[in-house]
Length: 237
Image (cartoon, rainbow, N blue to C red; front, side, top):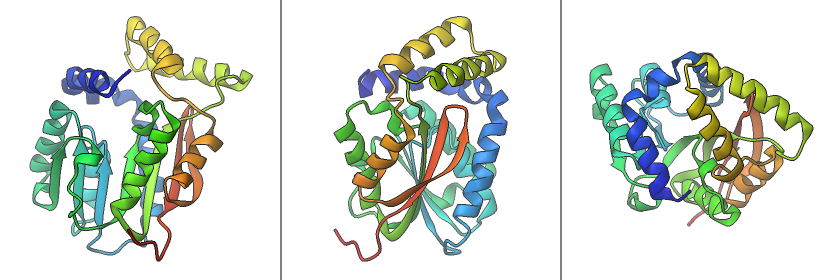
């Protein structure tokens, strides 16, 4: 599936996206709870890059807890970004945000370096391994030396017996989240052909080859895995 096809899907889902995934909130809340610990040592006036920000869930979470942090929200889907922008306005943190509609490689190089970045369930849509590593390098280039990345993707060894167990449990969770049977079947097919569900070690290696040190797995819930990594100190473009 190409970028424009993925973007079209998210454009169509934007209005119902948050409601559709509301029942999976415990996973999101646990991820954000751990994210708070990872970002605990960031400066009081930190700049945060949110890549593939969607409707702005992690952005809102961080903005509510850190009133002096500033954010760059990057999202290629206009309808998703519109919801994110409206959320920021409703909750009062829009003045601290720069909203960029487009892919990360279209974000101006002159943007001030960021102290940290989030990238949740985004890189999994990049099927080519070299392009996926290059994507992580784009994130690294937007961070100051020592800047931190918290990233999450679907991960598993799809050739292993364990994958079928996790996939079945994942699909049961989706069914409990009011995802239609038709949508579930599309999801199953997408995981096989349109989403790069890879073993966790391979994804960690891609993060490292993209310019980060020691990707550490800090969270897993079903198929979702999340890593913490840093841009090396002293690294200059």
